[in-house]
Image (cartoon, rainbow, N blue to C red; front, side, top):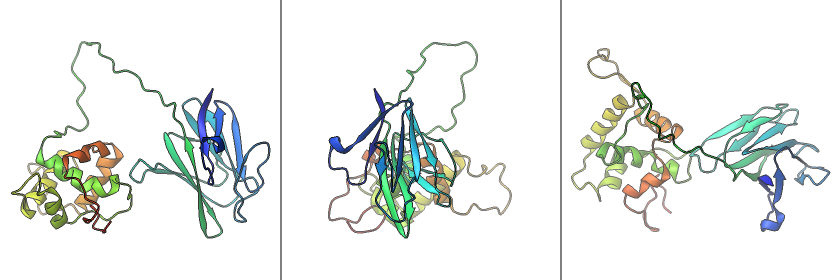
Length: 252
């Protein structure tokens, strides 16, 4: 049974997809043979790379002499891995992946799906001893979490490099569910989050006069990296209408 599905650039339906089983390999390039994936572009090497299915994930070999390949996670808010020239069997853990090949000034892409990801059921046994301390404790019913969700919203909605909202934009975004919101209240919650998530020490240990630069960027980076805020959490914010500005400030 197949474990990985490769979706070619010109795929028009399921019949054009390539399914490979665990242990099988698929070569891609300008002159791929043996039922490989042909990418007809002068900037792609004749044999550019190889995909190997391995149980619930897959491996990418970059057979190019001088081009780095990028594998993006379209659902990961900018998450990606880079595979250097000559690297073989680099593991790709994403369930949905987009392989990006630089080719003579163009960026060519094709998708790889690994739909058979498996997850272990939570162990409900009660063990003796002290409980494990959670890495991050966030209450999703609080206003500070609403501020964090609004901060992360542009990048969670498929714009991984979108500029972060300004304080004024956050105020506008939060007002429907928090009528008395103000710039000072938003900034207070951002400061609180930087302490709560340990991006800076609390007031009892902080060095006098020390400031943390890039607080918003640090918060969003941490939250998205460890899935502290997910796309499902955006339901706590008001819906974005088709004719209203997008969360990143760009009109839709």
